[in-house]
Length: 215
Image (cartoon, rainbow, N blue to C red):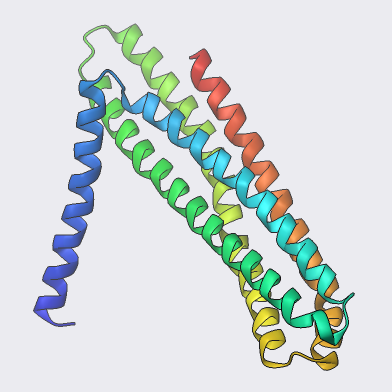
C-alpha cells in the first residue's frame, strides 16, 4: 500500500474519531451525558431492528407470492420483489449503522468511567462504582452479542434474496418460477431465523434500557 493511501486512511480515521469526540463534547455541553447517549443509541438500534424485521417479513411475503403467478404478471411481481429487496437492503444498512453507533458510545462511556473511578478518594464509593461498571459491562456484552448475531445473519439473507431476484430478472419465465419455488423453503427458513435473532436482540435492548434507568 502506498504512503498516500496510508495517509488518506489515517486522516479519515482521525476525522471519524474527531467527529465522535465532537459529538460527545457538544451533547455533554447540553447536559446529555454518554450514559444518556448510549441508552438513546440502544433505543435507535432496537427500533431500526423492529423496522428491519417488518421489512424482511414483507419481502418474504412478496417472494412467496412470485411462485403463484403466471408468466404474464411475472415482470410486475419481479419489480415489486426487487423494490422490497432494496428497502430491506436500506433497513439493513440502518441496523448496521445503529449498532456501530452503540459500540462507539459504549467505548467512550466505559473509558471515561474507568478513568473517573481512579479519581475516588473514598474506597467504598470506588468499589461500588467499580461494581456498577462491571455489571453494566456484563449487560452490555449480552446486548451487543445479540445485536452482532443479527448483523451476521442479515448479509446471508440479503444475498439469498438477491440471487433469486437476479435469476428472476434474467429468466422471466416458467423456469425461473420453478427455481424460486425450489428455493422457497430455504429462504423462508433463513428469514425466520433472522427474525428470531432480531426479536432476541430487541428483547436484550429493552432489558438493557430498563436496567440503565434503574441504576
